[in-house]
Image (cartoon, rainbow, N blue to C red):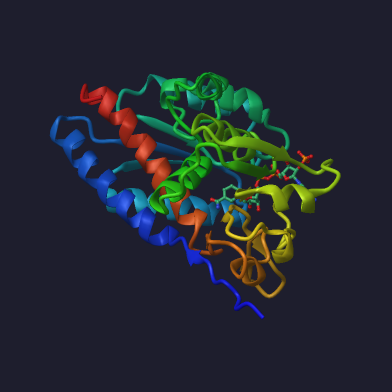
Length: 289
Ligand code: NDP
């Protein structure tokens, strides 16, 4: 009988902490040049999860020297009001990045609001200009979660060129930009989604697997190709409060060569990459980029 292989754990907290140290040093240089990085945070309504996300983004920002400006609006806010706020923030020279926390209430035209953000301040990387630049291989702002996944792969020294990579999920904020980044890193990329006929077979071929589905432990450990690298983007809250990913972690860790835990994997990277994007924008303002 062969002993179970136990994967190396890719420590997102440690990689994020290292990135935040770099971001802090770069923010200090911007401030010394009179361009303190400024992030506007727009939160509409009182969705508890959004409030938690916004609070942790603002706390981390303060720790690294990024100034945040809070815009909290009632759940009844309409599209026009938000468009007017975005126009003001676009014109404000002290604001380098604009973050509109999603989801917006149903009556708001989210697409119109996100497209109204000046692409040079679109630190989430959701504007069509930024998605287009990414597709062309000349990115400006790369969406934070897929950027974080790439940084984790780099930190784990995963060689991507020529590898079979599978991205499960095709959302605009995770799956699609993730696939672009892997392709630009010379991986051979497959994208799976809810209409994929045999997901287990796709997973079994993948040397690098990125799961961004939003279904607790949907990807079974027995599907994982032995030696594969597994990046689990999923964040699924079970009844009782436990947070699990999209991959059945314990069983997958017996087959993978490296794997991200949930929590403590991709999650901490997302905020660190957001703040890195804000400082990129401030560096352009300070003339040092
Ligand atoms: P979306 O709901 O926008 O997209 C989910 C994707 O998964 C869709 O493309 C969908 O396919 C696909 N999918 C759904 N069911 C299946 C299935 N049975 N088999 C294969 N594919 C399936 O989610 P997001 O991309 O926004 O988020 C995905 C996960 O990542 C969530 O758990 C979310 O909480 C987490 N997340 C974590 C972040 C972090 O910082 N760690 C940041 C952002 C998200 P189809 O297109 O056909 O519907």
